[in-house]
Image (cartoon, rainbow, N blue to C red):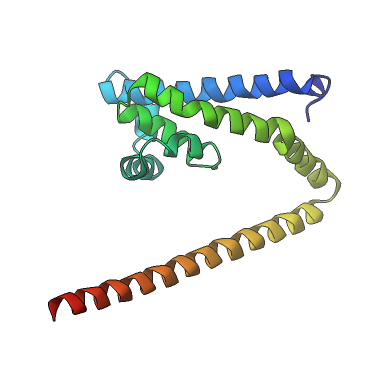
Length: 174
């Protein structure tokens, strides 16, 4: 953790991160609104026209507003969701109210251990880059195994559902 943050009481550190999450998400939302209104024709407009933002738009259209607070738990999709919310011209108050739980969770993660993990990684890399590489490989392997296991279970569940739907359809037609 940066030395200037180490002496802060937890509550102040937490509020600092809440404010950071709020400012960042609101800035991206309003950037998206500006692009949607045609007021911004900068590199930001081009950046909001990328595949991540299109994916975020599809997620919001499919799943609705719960995508907004859940996006705070993602890496890479978070900014796209906030920009997409502006592009979609979601009502500001509705977007903000849905964002608040995300701000609170994001701040808890970062004030409670995320910053320590980040600075610990930097310190480990300075001490032994190979140890950091080993940690990254282990974490990536665990994440990959969990994702593949989840995908396999979903595919099995979908296959069973398809068979049940076909069987149900066959009994109705006879």
